[in-house]
Structure formats: structure tokens, C-alpha cells
Image (cartoon, rainbow, N blue to C red; front, side, top):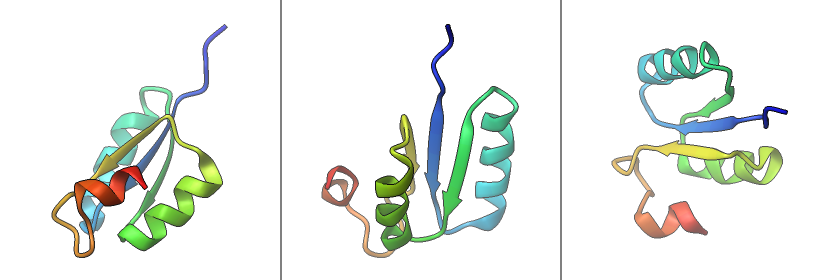
Length: 68
């Protein structure tokens, strides 16, 4: 039985998000993408992703914001 793999992409660049989302969907992931740290926190609470791809260069981001 294969486990469902989900990914949340948090990045301010829409073309990066689209390309990364396409890449991971083609490999069987369920993908959501958002453009801000705030929306990322909301989406983590909703979808409980297996993985998060996070741009640490986003305004309001830090290594602490990823883990909280």
C-alpha cells in the first residue's frame, strides 16, 4: 500500500511555484502552493503536508517560522 505524499510550496515567485508543483504532481504528490509565510501557516494547519518546500528569503520568514 502506497502512502499519500503531500507537499506544500511556500514561495513568492509564481513561476517557481508552478514549475515545482508540476514537477512534484508528475511524481505522485498532492501539491498546494502559497505565496506568503502567513498563508503557509494557514495551509499547514489545513492540509498537514508530508513535506514543505519553503523559501527562507520570503519577507517574514526564518528558520523558526518553519517549525512553529
